[in-house]
Length: 100
Image (cartoon, rainbow, N blue to C red; front, side, top):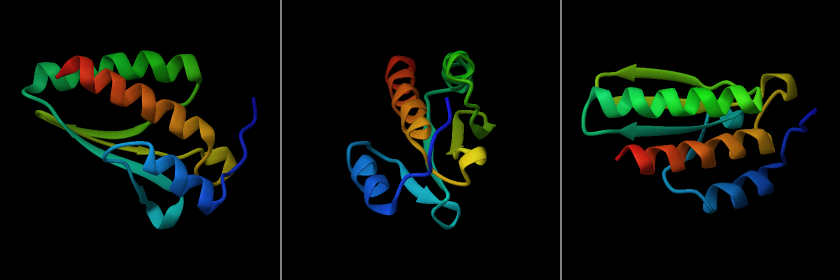
């Protein structure tokens, strides 16, 4: 399925529905900084998210150090933020809630 880049108003509306996500990369991505109790929880979160991302065929850009995971989501083929990024963001938030 091909996703279209969302207009700024739609991105702002969708971000208002999420907690802790913000616009990054000059408006071409959404980002969030997750903090867990320890490395095991952070890695468990990443494992769950990796499986969800694979099902969506949409893979995050992320960076992990110990208990912290920084996530950037963008749809490269659309040149910016699409509904697919928000689908994965919601799944990541659910995974974080289960990990914590």
